Amino acid sequence: MTLNDIFGEYAFVAKVNVSDLAASLEWYESKLGLIPDPSFQTATWAQLNLPGIPQVAIGLSVASQGIGTGGAVSTFIVADITAASNGLIEQGVQVGPITNVGDGVLLCFFQDPDGNALGLRQNSPS
Image 1 (cartoon, helix red, strand yellow):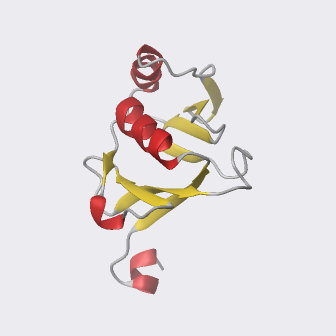
Image 2: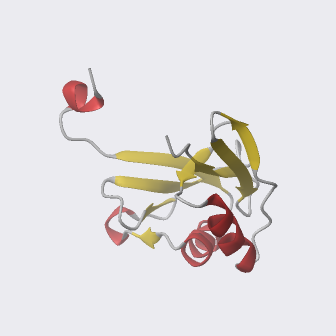
Image 3: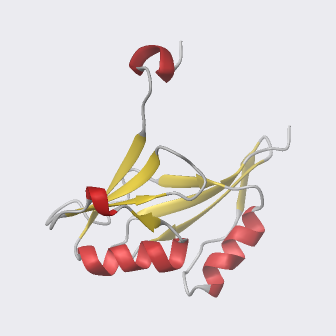
């Protein structure tokens, strides 16, 4: 059984708590290339679409607690983790080392301005 079987057509939004909506919106747009969706923007919420990945978005929610807690990690699956990591570093983002976690899967992590953990994952070629 898949999510399509359970929900029918669906979308996915990963919520990230932030302290400053405007600053975080600018960071996610300029550093990660995400596209703000004005139809889902309020005084306390902004949603950004992932280019080329329909129906998947990150929602930024203004919060006074739970910011940068490191609980959930939104991870971008990429074809070339080294190139993606270097691209972020060129944007001024501090990216941790690339780690082989076994079975050909590579991971590295970085943070948004509020300390929320984000990751890059390169899957095994097989």
